[in-house]
Structures are given as C-alpha cells and as structure tokens.
Image (cartoon, rainbow, N blue to C red):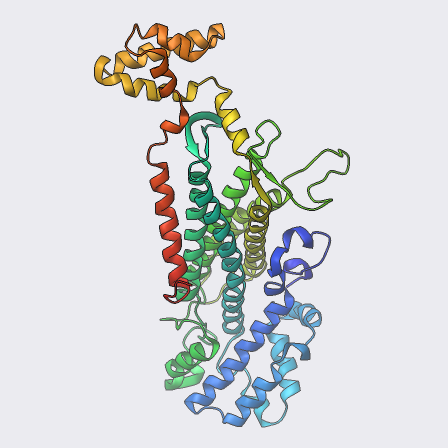
Length: 459
C-alpha cells in the first residue's frame, strides 16, 4: 500500500479521511491484518497437530505490527509483486529457531493477502456502519419531528406535489439504514478466509488440508469458504457492491441537502462554528460543507466499484494483474465510504430545518402544484378527461395573465366549486396522501432494526 491509500493525514486527509476510517484502511491496518493472518495460520496448524503449540505461540507473539516497517516492506514488495513475501522473510528472521520453519506453512502469498483484505474490510466496515448508524438516528429524529412539515416535492428539479420534510428524511433513512444493514450482512457471510496453497489444492498439507482451513477460518474470525477463491472473486465484488450502495445512499441524502440549502431555496442550512463553511473570497458564504464533502467522497465509489468488478476476470488458478489491482481500489473504496457516512452524520448534526421557507417556496407557485388535487376532486362529476381540461385551461390562463389561480379556477368551474372550496383544495396540507403513514412505517422499521442490533433490548 502506498501512503495515501489510507493515510489519515496528507493534504486531503481532512476531507477524504473523515471519522477514523483512515486508520482502518491505511498501511498499518493492512500490516496488522497480514500479521493476524500469519499468526492465525500458525495457531490453526497447532490445533490440527501439525505445529507444536509453543511454536505457534512464538509466531503469534512475533506478529506485532510495531515490530515491522510498513514502508520498507512496501519497497521490498516490488521484487515479488506483493508485500507478503518480504513480510514472511522478516517474520522468519524475527522468530528464528525451529518455530521459524513453521511460518507460512502450506500457504501461498495470496492466501495471506486475501485473508488480510477480508479482515481490513470487516474492520473498516464496522467503522462505516457505525457512522451510518449515527446518521440514521439523526434521520429518524428529523423524520419524527417533521412528519407534518409541508414542503414542495420536486420532480425533474421542478415543484410537483406537496410532501413533508419528514417523509424526505424517512426516505434518506430507509436508504442509508438498508444499505448499511446489507453491508454488515455481506461482511458477515461473504468475508471469508483464504487458504488454498500454490494452486488451490493444498497439496502440501495432504489429507489435513480441510481441517486446517476450518481451523484457520475460526482462528482468524472469518467465514469458512467452500473452496479456495483465488480466481473466483465474487466475494470481493459483493463487498464492493455493498460499499457502493452505502455511498449511493449517503450521496443521495447529502446531494439533497446541498440542493435544499441553495440560496434561492433556503429550506435547510448547516450551522456550525466560525470558519466552517466559509469562502476564501466571499465573506457572506455559509456553504453546507459537510454535505458537500459527503457527496465528494461518495462520488468516488462508482469508479472504484467498477475497478473491482472488472478485476473479477482472472486467469487460471492465479491471476496476473487483476488480483493486484484490487488492493488500492478496495482500500480507497472503504475509505471513501467511511468518509461519506461520517460527513453525512456531521451534516445532519449541523442541519437546521426552515419550515417557513418550505411553505413560502410552495406558495410562490401560486398553488399550481395543487392542480392535480382539483382535478381529482372534480373527476367524479365531470369525468377525468373533462376535469383535467378545465383545470389545465385555468392554470394556463393564470400563468399567462398573472392572476390568482384560485380566482381563475373558481371562474372556470361555473359554480361547481365556490372560492372557499377552491381555496381549501389548494391548501397543500390537505393533499399529503399517505405521507404520515409512510413516515411511521419507516420509523417502525428503524426501531425494529435498532432493537435487533441491540440483541433484542429496547434500551
């Protein structure tokens, strides 16, 4: 791994390494995972009886990240094409004696590298789901508080029908919580240990191969694979897709916040301390910078997911190139996803909702988004087509002349509805459909998911 493949610092670290994800995706995280895999392998051999227990203990004791120089190992990796070869050489020198002869026994470099990749994914995935869970709690609170806060629903970036900000927040909640739950499930079921030996047959372990694989998976804390998956990369693709889905959910919510915070809209605002969201040129600016940063992190996912999907096509029993391409892409995708979730959580923490602006923006159209309601109300008497034509003509006249829509509608309806009835039909609060019920459904799902994650406890 290069330093910027997960480093916490650097010029862009404050933006693209948000919330602790850098520490779980950088060089030290990979080094720790590689060493954990080697130590687990030694203990697995000891459990099966192929290695003395004291030798496994000595190897495990030596597998401490502080004993190794990640940068030096990375430089040495150029000779063999992966960092496992120099790591094993260094570990062998540190252990010494008879125990050193049992290091890496029966494994190939890819076994250790793939197992480490799954460990890194599990550990970084826990950071991702943690941030997503915190953001989900904030979204649930927003949905509950604003279940009846009326705002314009927008389609193709134009006002369509009224909705509530509670339902908007509930939609963000469902997307984020569902994607985080899916990621956790994929990492639990599909993140498996890898042990197949040089060509996937475990020939060097003889009849003990299956028993060692089972013990190795147990020792390293990963799922046990049915077969070695050296060139069957569906597991990596599943993890990539799940991470991409979280980025999609986080990016969707963050992008909506950015749009709603536009000067001409002003329906939400990020409020933070001095200097947050400012401009280097314009002293008046209060940019929704946390939402912007979440979107920037999420935007990286499609390309990285694409790289990992393309890398599934691997040659024969060991790949020449596609496998190697996975490491930086996976690291960056994990880092981008964790940062997107963390920034979204920060944006929601800072978010201030402006119900007055929502009402004013909806009223600015003069009631046009409520035209469908008038048509629906008239349809039983006039038929759908004639009702639509009457209302369409009134809307066209009001738009052309600038007259009040309610006044024009009342005139066009020839006494079918008086002005008071038209005014009532144009009130957006009376045309929210199932929005309140949908909010409650989303909140019920959130409560159930919270209880499940707490092991059945309600508190």
